[in-house]
Length: 522
Image 1 (tube, rainbow, N blue to C red):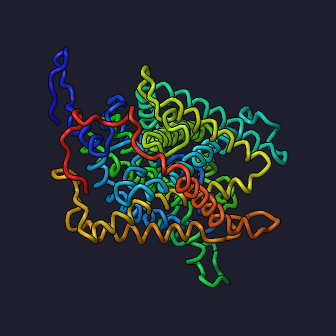
Image 2: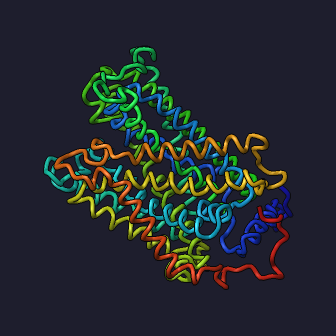
Image 3: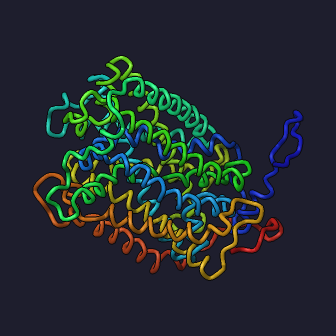
């Protein structure tokens, strides 16, 4: 990367190419470029957050698929890798805030872009609340002191306590994100460093306590699926949700592109590194957990999850140290999820595609970050949490649906991109990341994978969408109903109201004389 000498002789990165991508989309640079390679990598890997996801969902996978559910981890990785490779080409060409929104807009037009951004923004706010709830799964297992509401045995004790702990976490995340991307990146990077060290150490500790071989553990199905029309395959598809719920959010590495140095080069690398590192670490944690747990058929595997495995295998003292690392992972995951949501809301508001767009898109002159979106997303996240006090089943439905909406938002990028490839309209940025002749087959696989997994996630399973009685048809079909309402309701508002106002706001629009030379738009 070229640069000029700073006042102390230190190289200053040349941002002309970075700003050219903004100019091509009609934006002037406003956010402060302070993030380096590790910061963007950390943002992607903390959103995926392997320790958070595996500790939060291990019980689900084992409950519905037995230990053999482990095979869903490499399956989901291969599918998501196809999506990530498409995103890498887009990140090299358009490394801008609100990446999914801007990519969908550039590939499919303003209407597709708005729908993709709307779906992603709604899902991100629900995901923020869902991740914050993970404090309840871990902190009370470390010490009963963290059960502030009752003793945990009451009907709503755990739900109410989860709301309290989650609200405190979201408040912390909102303050950090509002005070600027540099503070967020420093805390996030430190947290990711701790998470990675703890994850590697956990792998080593679990490996030292192996009691069985892979052949016996990874083929154990508990007899699940017997008597069903699809047999174990049906049970496996349900269990695969535990992996699908974890491996997404890698696009965050590009969503910070306007605050990064040389994002056209670094963002694609950060996306791939975050996904591959998460896959490898998660695969070994899950594998060695299954190989080291004292009793592979213990009921606690499907109730206490990985927390039970760690405490039972490593003992209380060492186990609690690792659980504290999980708390750190949850914290930085919430930071990353909110940071991505802020950039997405800012990007849509900058195009006047949200109500009060000029207010939401205002950049703080002091902190050089959009403060209002941080507050709005934080408030909405807390409000969603409060719903969980008396409606835990409905909340679990909405949480599952949020993940589907993210997969659908990804499809609103990969499908238009595939159509452009078929028409010969898509050209990667010259000299940057490119799939070359593999672009078309990879894009096709990304679309097929996204469609299949979205249907799998949304399938009206009682065990996912109506796990406890009484049974209601609207809960079983909650994915289709909720997504339909959000998509159709939101798009109706856009079509009849907001689209007549859309366009880059004057205060964010690049002036003609300042428009940097940029390659012809694809």
